[in-house]
Amino acid sequence: MKFHFSKILIVIAVVLLNSCLSKSVDVQIVESACKDFKISNASSNRVIDPSCTGTPLTAIYDVTFSYDGEAKCLNKILLDPVFYNTSNSSMSNVSYQQTMIIATDSLVSPNYSSKKITFRFKFTFANTTEANNFDNCILTFHTENEQGNPSKTAQVKLSGKCTQVVTTNGNYTVKETISVSSSTVQFTLWDDGSEDGDIITLYQGSNVLLQNHTLTNAGTTYTFTVPTGTTDFILIANNQGTVGPNTCALKVNGGKKISLSLDLSTGQAIRIVL
Image (tube, rainbow, N blue to C red; front, side, top):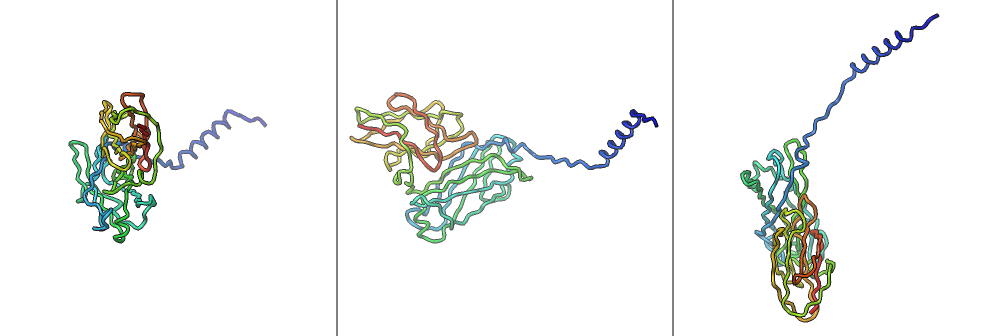
């Protein structure tokens, strides 16, 4: 018996082709534009703050951010806050609204022409003791489009009026120790990375010297007075955006450049010795 291999191969190919054509193909289409949607310049403004007093039980902060991308990624804002007390322990018994619909929620004020969104974040404590012990909230948030595709996240620190967790609890590291011969020192501060709205607060010990200071690439110089002995100048981040950590650089009295990488929960300090 003779086999015609060429004919057999043709028959096998036809069978396989028919088999492939009979199967369905599932295609999933994913909206990916919001993955590149950037939130920047996140900042907060304290409206009502129950820390230190315990009343009222509801705190209110206005949070504003800029965005770079299409407005279709602005259907919802999703909030993921972590609350801390004066002992730097997280607080779990705090109620808040997790999701905001940008177009209909009265707590959201969009400004599409300037590409800015402001939303009012309210959170309520269980009792006056917890309200009194509130120190700060680290609020992580992102936006979503109608299909639920998320943007990148941003973070902003909501500090109570008497916030001192970082300074009083020693929750910071000393980056550099610098000896000076005069009670007057100059600090030059600037953004060491992309100018994306990084905001810092500068403490001298537990006293606030600069609050909600926006860093620029050009930089700003300030003059401070230090007492005899050792003084820590503590820098903390007020926000973090999609570009990465809060990147601050500084010089003391025009000396060498000191680069810092700040997060929201800890600080870095320059120790001045006179």
